[in-house]
Length: 67
Image (tube, rainbow, N blue to C red):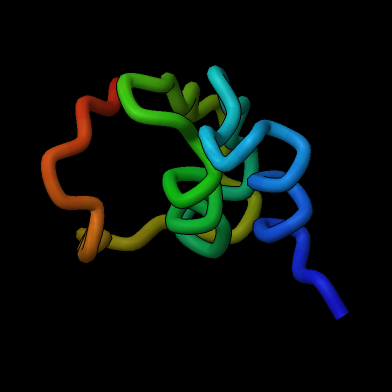
């Protein structure tokens, strides 16, 4: 069974999406970051899942990401 993220990468040729509109907050921000392409944009417009004081981003290497 494919995950949402693996299906996203298949549909984008392994690149990831250009822009994510993030409304979930701390509960979904890491999935949004994982799905965006190199130099992509994650627009945070809500915090439905709550707010944390910090989010640790690992294994993104040298990514240029705009939050």
